[in-house]
Image (tube, rainbow, N blue to C red; front, side):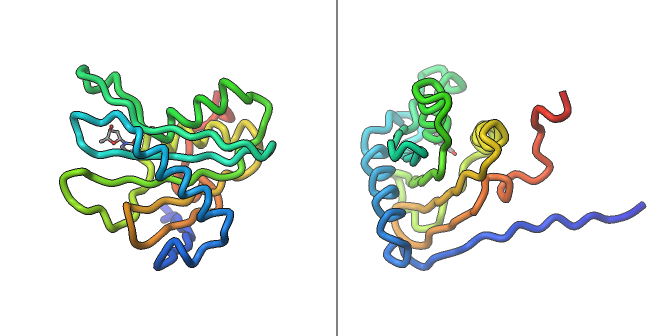
Length: 160
Ligand code: THU
């Protein structure tokens, strides 16, 4: 038997203002997208903004459903739209902002496991990292230089 240690390195910023202008701008687009989230059941709204290699930005937000599992997270709404509309264009980064209407969300909210798996698919497909930035309504911002940092031991096409 041998033990294997898995480590991920993330960057944590105290405030959005510490980041470069272009990242602040992308996060603002995620905030705008979040305002249009359809989250009547959880009251937890999420916005995501993707920067593409053609300088285009694709945004998405969570879309809930009375049949709860039929809803979709913001990250997947955005990345599937990018995949559908711009299939050959690389995704450079994703900014995510999330928070509850029931309480103030001041800690960074990472993408859920299903969204990490979905984002990983595109990172593997394009063979280039997708930077991820995530935050709550205010406060710290976490940066991951690649989705892979957030999903060690990924299941991908190499095993099929
Ligand atoms: N949600 C997202 O949009 N992204 C995530 O990564 C986690 C959760 C949404 C799904 C649901 O509409 C609400 O947040 C509460 O789970």
